[in-house]
Image 1: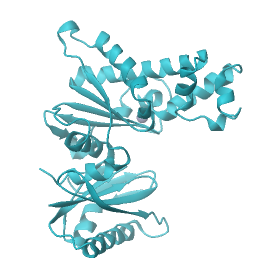
Image 2: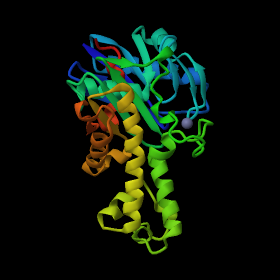
Image 3: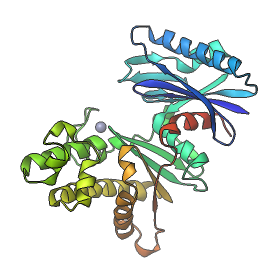
Length: 314
Ligand SMILES: [Zn+2]
């Protein structure tokens, strides 16, 4: 049996054919053409999928799973809204089904990512998993009691927009103090810049060629390893924000494992070790609460395709 996984990201569409072992056996990409109507874009995606299946003589394709970076409705198969793509009320599943005659399912990108990690990635054999993707924002995915937890209409698990600090930093969602304003890569970048402006002697300046535009989510970690005091402070503060946010999710969902994905997760043990220490010390329930493991996601750039394909697997 084969499964089509479609990953609709902010920049492009990635399409892969996935087998039952979670391996991508072929893939192709499509660029967004913002000049054509949104429905036409999905229609041409369907046509490309048909052509790809035909060219490769694939048989036994079970259906199409779609991972979408936007607000989706898993019941209707619509993308209700995507700020990046400027999509509103787009019947993604309906259009794909009409032109391919294949069964189609959709889910939010972070929910697909956790499903992929559970089925074929680092979280195999776990029953309760919380996944956080640390990028521009913080994506949240929940796999609880052996199933994906999506909530009403599949709009659940927006962990990045849970309130972290009342009346805190302004978030793109309109609220103030959301977790992602403290724990995302963008938050780390902004905190690194702020620290640099206050500390002209920091190694961070030299490391960024004396240009704030060169600051990314990696420089503070790099300079902390080189023992720069300011960078160490920035990293410790970031890890502290992240850990105490994660602690909330541990106390609410009591997962066995936390999976971290996104750009910042490239820091591997530099990130997971201190988080584990804080969780161990602060987990509610004292010594009788099982220790929560913290692991780095494994599927990387393929998470969307594989996770989307998993929507069709039993
Ligand atoms: Zn928010």
